[in-house]
Amino acid sequence: MATTGVGRQRELGAGRASVALGWWRAITLFARRQPLATFGALVLLFGLVIAVIGPSITPKDPYDTDVLNGLRSPGEGYLLGTDNLGRDILSRVLVATRFSLLLGLAAVVFGLFIAVLVGVISGYAGGIADMVLQRIVDAAIGIPFILFLLLIVTMAGASFLSIALIIGLYQGVTSSRIVRGAVMSVREEVYVEAATTIGATPVRVMARHVLPNVIAPVIIIASLNLGSAILAESVLSFLGYGVQPPDPTWGQMMGVEARPYVTRAPWMAFFPGVALAVTVFAINVLGDGLRDTLDPRLRGSVA
Amino acid sequence: MARYLLGRLVVSSISLVLVVVIVFVAVRLMPGDIVDQFFQDTGARPGQAEALREKLGLSDPIAVQFARYLGELARGDLGESLASGRELSTVIRDRTPVTFQLAMMTLIFSLAIGLPLGVLSAVMRGSALDYLLRTIAIGGISIPFFWIAVLTISLPAYYWRWTPPIGHVPLQEDPLASIQHMLAPALVGTVFLAGSIMRMLRATMLEVLRLDYMRTAAAKGLSRATQIRRHALRNALIPVVTLIGIRFIFLLSGSVVLESIYALPGLGQLSLDALSRRDYQVVQAVTLFMAVIIIMTNLAVDISYGFIDPRIRHSRA
Image (cartoon, rainbow over all chains, first blue to last red; front, side, top):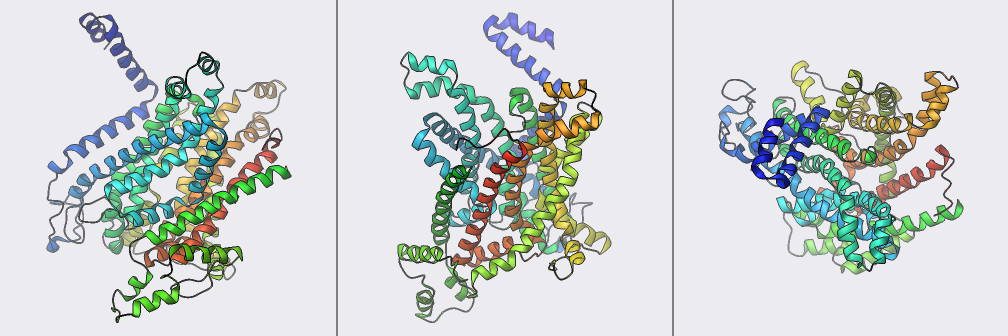
């Protein structure tokens, strides 16, 4: 591994290669120190591959109903069994991967934007702006999460975009506290004072000096929020408030679809749940590893 | 301390007003109302729906409705259910013990499991046992609780034709049966909460274990158990208390799903039913009630710091 690195260094010229070499070293070091997190990263990568190619590798048509073959237990012909309408569970689990992962990612990206916006303004400006924003944050935390989701999603109508935006908004508002805390401690640093003294505008100080120093907590929040975003969407679909059929989602498969048949066909709920649990587990162990590596001080503050 | 409390109470009531406004507007923006739901199957004669809306006060402008609602709240009146006409303060009083019992049982199980294992994991840092416990803990917070809940019903039913008892027996009627009925949902909640407590406690214990006073405690010859119990654990518990506060809120929220799976007549099921029936009054009352509990929990957590750690005295509000 090291020899390829050195070989590439000669090829590419010193500057760029040392960056590449640095990345490679960082990755191998991470893999050695955090085997579980690396396992998580590999599983997540596998999930992303399924998300991309899933619809083209399904053994059966995930939408094709075949009532004569309904509620078949896992086995020949249907590896993971069929649901009440005779649709192949494996195919539906594969197709649903894309929805869950993409929705989670979209929610987290939007949530980060909100968290950074609210956290930086609140932490850096202080005073009235901080007071007003924090009361809104309190109110958001005060409404039970699942009720809030059900209420707002019903209000706005359930679609991929609306669910992602609403989960992202909630996560962003609630995790803005962590960004705010980080900003408040950075604000007191000497280099921020120095920048202000030589006449840098507040916006410049924020963008050039404060933001780069709160990147670590932001990355950590993102990785830990991804798991909960995917879970949140699943709860919604589980209760029948998610995107409408026939497009399968894991939550909907194990909730609305499986619950009438719980005692007759446990596989209907079992396998989508395995996919969901493994995905969230992989994301969480990866997030844990990243947190330990990037900022050990944060251990505990975002459990 | 009194000033600090007063300040916090004022700030909390601002947040509560925000909750009231958000929920009031959001329920009315949902498509369809209770009258549509009512006549969905039977169909309404001309004018019948309008008359019912008039009677329920739903045809007034939203500002008028809001003013009326605020007036009721100011008199301490939560209003009546649109669907059943029942006094909501009574309904909530009947439903709360169920949700509360579930939350308390989950909390007790989680502490009984999470605290000792969290300490063990920190003390045995780096060992195979530590690694195993950490993996279990992170598994606990990753596994969807509604999935396990469904499996606790479906797997035993399919393979052994047996299910854990479903439904609810009030605690004062038959304590043993009551606890038995709530065992399955409480244990499902415990998987998540115990994992969460283990993770937090391990992390904070590790921070405390390397501090100077731990070396002092060891140097003066205290037994390892006393060092851990008297010096390390006490200091490591503060963030755990915060976490328990936050997770208690999560339990209230999770009750929406657990109560629906195990047919428990608590606040969660009440709100879920009300939401699908578009019973605005019930949704408003339950969310307001839960928001009060959540905001009080947060306040209690902050105040409890002072008791656990005498150095924090809330001199600055």
